[in-house]
Image (spheres, one colour):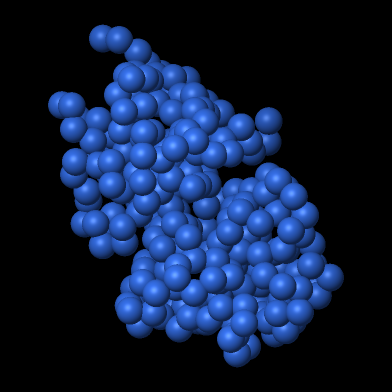
Length: 265
């Protein structure tokens, strides 16, 4: 049987820790596969690129999670519900789409106790998946985004939404950066005047970006707030994706024992 090939599609993608995570697990669990990264500039070519590279599965990161949804032949019920896919596997020539971001994120923030109200900064693909699962688990979600058009679908589904121009601050237990602001620059996910109003009353601040202390988390620390980057979310969603890649042949904990080494190397 030929070695199976997996990849992560994104733009940017050079910073991704996913190849290291998955290859450590493949090696540690003696699964004959290799995982690489691919800079996908145009999401509309996702399906063609997947086929041309002869992949068995991919993870998909920003900005292509909605394109990944459209590329799939079959979708699991949760992915169908939220319209966003970050994990695809090939079975008998068909592409099957899943979302592992949301359950991974839910597990990552479970350490914060007595949290009910959450403010999302941004309304892209990651927010699209996590807002649904958090609401299903009883959290109250508010979304704040630069522009109004991206908020329309959330508004239709009953979420409280604001733009920077019409924002009416409240008290939020968690403030979460769901954007790529701060990934490759020193930008903030929202105007500092807004952040200076919502961070002080929060219990903690979370950023989905991992591997660096973003300007958002630095600002939160000036207010002595507990902070968390996206490392745990990345780890947990990666473990769940690995379960799909390997048809659930391994336990969550056995995969974790190898994948988590990627964060100390």
